[in-house]
Length: 463
Image (cartoon, rainbow, N blue to C red; front, side):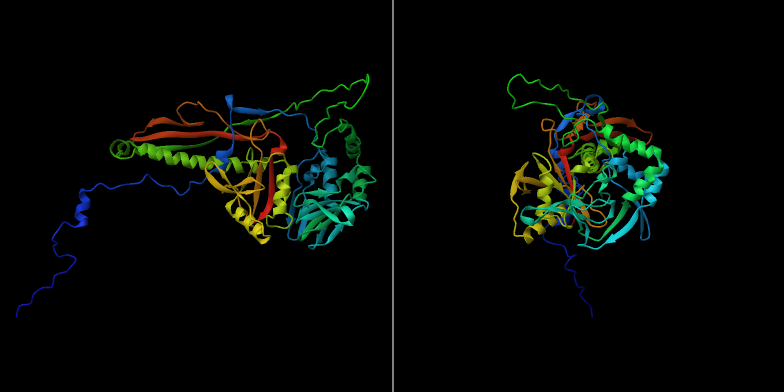
């Protein structure tokens, strides 16, 4: 008996040309190479860019008298916290003091205290008997308001201090009450201990006695020497003489650089250029990566990055943890003409949650053809280069922009050799003995804050 073999339907010859064979004669439509690492890069888009000839930008300011404008740092061993002796010079009364032994003695006489959330630390109007150094936590400054009420005067947090005015004023009194918002660790330096050390140290006494002479010029609220003026007078009043003094050591910003070497085999460049030029596509993606790094450096670089160049008087802490509408209002009122807010997308989501919980719905505006959320009419732009810490906290930046506004500016130098974009060039470096072509791709940039109130930061924002 002869059996008839079964024919596989998939391998049986068809009555027409199948698609697999047809594709060998067809032209495939292709996209340019795609890249997931490209972000909106709002900071690069909104910054006004200033031409910097010679690679250096000098910011001239009026002379400012500053005493202790940093934050105190601590070290810990288990539950014990100690202040670093040299960090005590951040206190205005000890700024510039170089007595190592005295600073070590003062640090050793600090007393560690722990406070629970909601606990009252000092009462307003009471004598100042100690200087408080906040090692960890948040403390609310509460003042007397109208009609026997209370008003919030701000928040102290890690590295801040209070009561230091009593180091030079024996009749010092607390001008506000301090109340812990979170669990706090505070180091207290009793004034009796400070005065005992000063009585035994001639250099420390001389430093404190010379403090008033160093503060002789009358100053405005920003620390600049007052310009003497007369107004509202009649007759032949003798007018005051004055002059505007300048800072003799202005800060200079040198252009930074981000670079890489792009390598392309000559055979690839010669033979595989249709329909897309291989060198151009390689260069396009490399430029995108450099621009991403450029924005990261503008935010995070320790020399010129915005997060590290905000004045300490322009750094605020959230009242509780999440970014509330009250915190955003405090941030934007620290300067005139706040033009943009920048935050990590997760921070913007946290702001939205806090607004929704209060029944507040922020508006929207169009910026550069894109719809973005606003707060009080100020665009709130996403920037994924603002870091989120391991404790799930981040920051919100508030900026005024432009030289004409005494704001924040970006720095670059256009017209450099082999330029393909402003301040970005690709220079041919030759072909090696493996027939690989090399291009040096560089972008030159920096940023400057012209006056301190041009940039503010809301810190420790829980996301």
